[in-house]
Length: 180
Image (cartoon, rainbow, N blue to C red):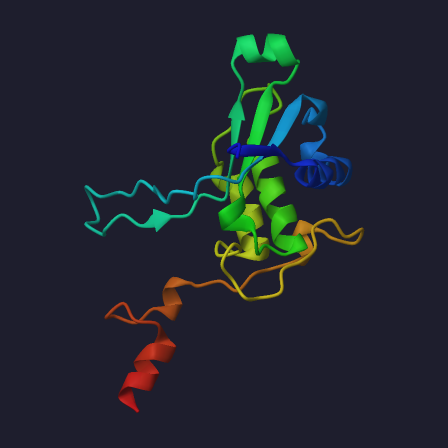
């Protein structure tokens, strides 16, 4: 069995997002190959931390999808510039809303100049404030970003602030429960 299969479903999400979201209008949908990795499990990746300042252990994260730029030779042969790979095992239970957010996330990696963009704090902050940093694992009902009345400014995910943390580093609710 091949490791990859064409993924027209994801192309459909991407087309709808580019039509709807002004910040994605520069994305050349026809230059993207959408594939689903069906053979291997998504390997957790390690996120870099400020380990020299904070000695917290590195957290393993599941990789749901990846956006990559294709080599000049592959571009010449296929006319395609990018590939978005979705790991089937990690995303098989995603709702329509989560899949749309995942595709939005991957499309945001394609910059206006055609290069691949890393996560920009200001840009991703908008998404995190609207739907939360835990959008892939939350049980909350997420907004449908493809809905005609959706606006990033309209949604605000639950936020954790420094005021929510007590001196020992425990959330107030946990500290209150421990004292009762």
